[in-house]
Picture (cartoon, one colour):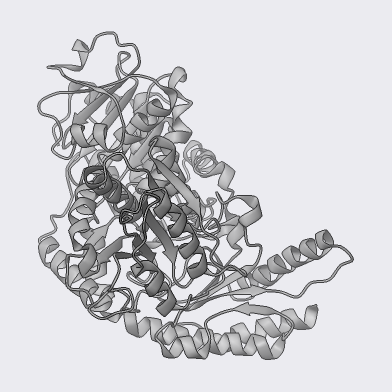
Length: 625
């Protein structure tokens, strides 16, 4: 790795820091590299990254790099898509090399999204932005699309050297494209420095106290529209710095892994068109949303675009949809209550009739089965509602909807293939890869379209590439290995879940369990997740709600205490082993409106777990209440 004189001097000055990082790399716990989800009971979301780094810094000051000490550090983030120990350590090192606060350094797997995070905030703040670069503009940066589809405004400026950047009334973003991701300087004439690397992603540095208010907004973009730099790439970047040489292994199987992954996806989904793989489920959803907005802008110029979204669905979906709408005047989110007494099909029909009269472009995002109530609508009625030809107020034919199906709970069900239930209306399906597709080994997600929607895939792929959110080489490698066994893992996990649900029904019949019926299971809906509404007591609604919430936590704490090797207080499911417990209202529905939150227990089982032990502990819980 070529080192500038400046970086050589910084490395000499920080030799103690880099020697410590060498020791950390040698001694780090294996789960720093391999885990995708972490326990919520040892995680404080308000102190994400901060609490971890405070205690990491204490270890550094005491020259303590022992594995046991590193393993006891608090959870940095609950999910590696948002960040993880290695991303925090990388950001800590970069901050020390540049003499800035660690929170002012944010690493991304994407090279584009850090730029978009600043453009988004300046759009909302009505502030000017200039993007400065040397050499040529990055190949992944499409200025015209960012201006016309995303609504961002900015000036582009090419310079020979960073010192040639003049005064500007607004934010100055400098893009540095170098193989050595640490080599650029944080000069006083720039507000944001983005170091990009063709394989690792990028590192964004926020310069100066006057820009600190951007940090939380940049973090939120990373949380919702992309992912943090992956653990494997963070580790390689750290090794590159401390060993002063590139030790990155070249992946010679990438094309073969891509081919195997897409072949497996089309086989599993029963579709014939092109399959896309993204760095995460939300990265995939963002590309879908922006691709559909792009398509509507070209084909239905001037018409309002409406995203119809269940208000209590997964918080990331809910939040991202509203974030997109906040940036574009012609895009709006329409609530669609789907469960807990609401009928999804009736709701969709009512909303589509209203939007047809308005001559709007309707896009529906929904989960089947729903989350967290695990409900499946009448699919024949859904098909009829989606296929219905509607008229506008002036009598012209209304724009037909696109049904965007989050299929994460049941990725094995054929919705979109020839003669499948959703083949007669425009539909796209996507899934989060950190669940069953990878077995919890990576975050990569994917999407496919039915024949009526295949033309939309081109625009979705354009935005996936623009945001630099395609799955990484390692993610493709993992998916290629894991996808072929997915349907068998789903079937085996369902057997455990059905047995556990039946046991709870027998042991605690007063509890309300939300799970698929035997009849739905015969149709192929075999999720391994159910929600549990525990019995409660009290004189008032408030007392009953308080008692139930305390009981939820009592059950979860008992499970993770008695079976720590298998039961986790965690948001995920579809893993290769163990059992996962969470309360949607305090985890997956974190950004959902309070009135729409579900304070119930959600339980997810795998094919590989000691079911009898879980039954025994549940029986102890029942006996205790």
